[in-house]
Length: 245
Ligand code: NAD
Image (cartoon, rainbow, N blue to C red; front, side):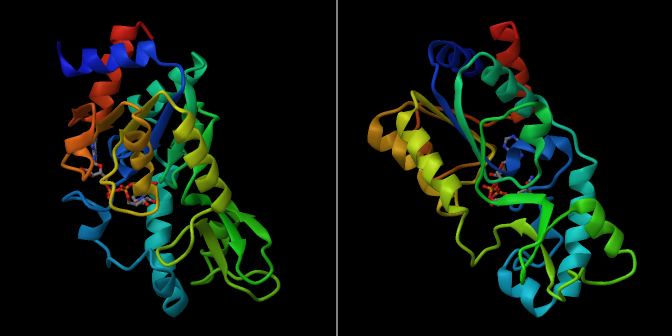
């Protein structure tokens, strides 16, 4: 049987699906990932998402981040996001734990989402925690290199930088839901960024079928039930066709 058919059959039989998504689910929406040949690491300094980069060079950080934010703002969900939203409509999704900061799952209509690394469209003041939306920040950036709060603090994106702890509640719920799932699907992650990359261990320990849809190898490939190379959009479209969605 074809791999995609096997995936559709598995999905049809299961009702508590846990999904871990990474930057690879959004590349077909035009948002580059980190580690592919055209990824962000090929264009920008590798430490651009280190908290020290923002602290030492906020102006330089905002130059890069504004570019990325504008790409995110013009992106639309692809068949990968749409499949997951349709599966939620069928009551099959327990949770989508996403490492992405682009908000495309929400835009596709999914609601059961844990944003492990935050969201690039939200901002807050690092001094007084006042929240700002991206329109205000983009407006401020027209006249100033680094957006400042009325209290004088630097306004920063609500994303988790390397060197910062993950959103604790999102991570706790993710482990809990992964444990309670009957199918674990990884979509578009190189599974090298921790602690998100330790989530598939739950599937292996609990003997939950693990499906990986990812271009390129991951450390969990030898242990998974099914590995598909993608592209995620094409695989998702085929799954929807087989399932009549
Ligand atoms: P990653 O770049 O390490 O891995 C992405 C993986 O997806 C790669 O193995 C790549 O080969 C694969 N891939 C790319 N396009 C694919 C496709 N169409 N079909 C199948 N596979 C595809 O990204 P990661 O594992 O998510 O971890 C890196 C960090 O990057 C995350 O923490 C995330 O916060 C951040 N990030 C997010 C975005 C976003 O929000 N869209 C974009 C870039 C980086």
